[in-house]
Each structure stands twice: as structure tokens, then as C-alpha cells.
Length: 314
Length: 186
Image: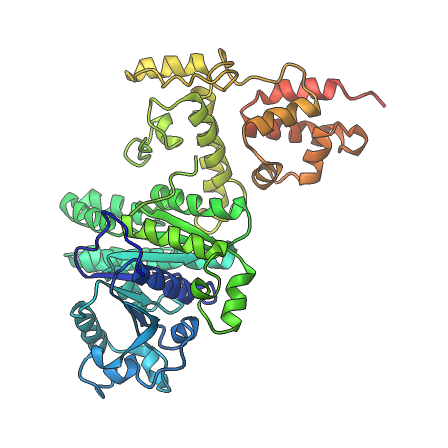
């Protein structure tokens, strides 16, 4: 039976995505469990596995590899995405699998991506939740940027945090480049992409200052674009309080040094129940519904729906 | 309370600590510890974002802001010079707002036990201090246990004590001097 959540009705179709830059940090598990929870709250959800080079969202959900996948749509073997949508083992929840034997599907072309985006926007659901692949490919960045809710998953490890920042900066610069209306601003964004550039532009805030010196209107336009980009952090596999605090640190550092209004949606503890469920190829939300991790996913999902943050950390 | 935006008010000490001007003394303390930890050497949330020199600059700014805002008298002068309203009063017996007329205080008698009590009353773990100061946690434990024979040479110990005190918002010189004064001469 679906859980009612008063006052949080999704008024229109929303696109959510889960990125993170690094592989093996639990993006797919977060996508599967948040999607499952949204469905349980009464939303009509379709999960999209856009990790075309390493799709395994179906496994996280306890499903066998689908006979149909996103690659069939990309290769025009089916006319629309509904054709590749399968039931995902819970009411209101469906899956567009990314699993494919088509190796080239990992690098879809720009026009193919636009077709996918157009179809996603037309799906008759409340939430489309996209599981992005690792790395900072333009495909991942573009799906992340077009999302209404952009979830950035990290684990409390240096490599994950480094890649998380790299992912955010890459996404932000890509957004700013799109917004740039003149060649010189675009050129400056390209320069900023090199962290050791000779212009001394080290952060998006430096870039804004540099643009503002020459063209205040252009800087305002970029600033508005930055304001609309609001990644929501989820810290996965935390073990202690210091790990939990990393989410607060990321939000504070993003605000002060990248000029971004990120939020901290919550954290999920490292727990045996999660990997035990995974080994049984079952989602821990159904296999261990009373586990701490399951309760934390419920909290994270509610925070994401309401746009809430855990606060400042002080 | 919405945190102040530092980029919009770069010379505002409250913005340095991410606070609004009416923040309570307790909020100032919590914010100070948070930002000091954020800019600590090798802190996970910033080490890959900031160069070490930049992190050090930020640490200095946080300390400078706290030296004013953590001192009731200096804070009042600063607020008046800026036209800010007085801070929110926190009616907490023995809390930070109550016992700090003139600045960072030291426990009455600086012993390991009194330091530990002060630290715990602020909800700070030894792990947090170790993480920011890079002092081995076992040395911090020796300090709080008054295990003088296990402590390092005086020149190092003084630095450890000062960093420990700074983290907790205590007077670093007074804490180091009083604590070391209790160590029996060899």
C-alpha cells in the first residue's frame, strides 16, 4: 500500500538523476532504492539506466537482464521508450534497462541523446529517475544538468570526493558555456576548464569576476545559471559522525568556493544488510525494510521530494 | 537562521563564519569549530578543492573572525561599528553566553580532567580535534589523562596544548602555561 505524504504531491513530471563521477559508490543502489521509495509513496516512477557501458540497475532491483533496453530505442529497433519499459517488481515502478550487448551504445551521439531526452520528457509518469554512469562524459553531464533534482552521490573516501568535485565543476562549466552568449565568454569558460590556466581562473567564482570586469550583463546571466544548478548530496556508506559531517563540508565548500547552492539530502550507513541483499540479488528496501539503511533512504527520499537540506552542520 | 553569504560580504566577520549578526555565542562557537575543521590540513571536504596555502589563509580568517566574535566585548564593539543588533541571548546556565565576559576563557584549574570536561560539554570529540590539528589522538588522550611521562618534549607539548585550546575556543597561551606549570620538573 502506498504511503501518503501530505503536501508533497509532484505537480508535474519531474526528471531526477543520480551522478557522482566515480564508479562503485552505490549510485545504482541509491537510484533503485529512492525510485522504489518514491513508487511506494504513490508516484508513478520509471527508472532509466543510462550507465550504458556498465548497466546493472536491473540487478539492484532483483530483476533478470531485460530482453529490451535503451539501446533498442537508440538503434531505432523500437519507435518509442514505452516499448522498452518493463515492470520493476513493485506497483508504480518501471524500468528502462541499459543492459545491452551493444558495446557502442556507451557512446551515444548528440542527436541520439536529444531523441532520448525528448522521449523522456513525454513519458506518462510522475518521476523519471536516471542512473548515470561514472565519469564526466557529456552525456552524463547533460542528463544531470537537465534534471529537476540532481542527486550527487559520494562515499567518504578521497577518490570519491575528488571525482565528485570534478563532476560538479565539469557540469557547472558546461552549463556556463551553454549560457555564454559571446565568443569571448565561451573562450574564457574553455580557459577555466584547465585548472592551471594562465588567466588565474581557478573556480567558477573567479570566472564570474573575470567576466564581470568586461560585461556585467553577461556575468548576471551566468550567475543566474549557477543559481539554478543545485546539486543535492547524498553521502553513502557512512560509518561514523565524521563521515556524516562530510556532507555539511561539501555544501559549505560548494557555496563558498564554487558559488553553488548545493543541499545535503542525507546519508546512508554502511550496513551488512545492504550487501547481503545485493548478494541475493534483491533490493534491501524489500529484503531488509527495517534496516538502518532502508530507514535512511526513506528520509533521503522525503528530503529530496521536499527540497530539504540537513542544515549547515553547525 | 540563514547563513550569511561570504562572497557578498567579504569583509564581514559574521560571513566568514557563515552566520547572521544576531547569532548566539553558542552558534559562534559551533560555527568556528566547523569552519576550522573544514579548512584543516587534509580535510576530506576541501583538500582536493583548495591549495594548502589557500586553506591556511582561510583558517587564519576563521581564527581572526573568532577572535572578535568569540569575545563578548570585542564583538559588542564590532557590532556597534557596523550598526548590528545585539546577539540573541541564550539563557543557558553555564553556557557559552553566560561565562564569557571578556573573551575565550580557560577552565579555572587547567588539568587534564577539566579540559576533558570542557571539551565534552561542547560536544567535541577527540577525533575531531585530532583530525583538524593533526595531533595524534593518543597524545590528546595523554593530555586529558595527565599522563605526563607519556607526553612529548616541552617544545612540542606547548604547541599541542595551544592547538587543543584554540580548537575549543580557549585562551591558548593561558592553557599551555597553566597546564605545563603542573608538570613536575624532571
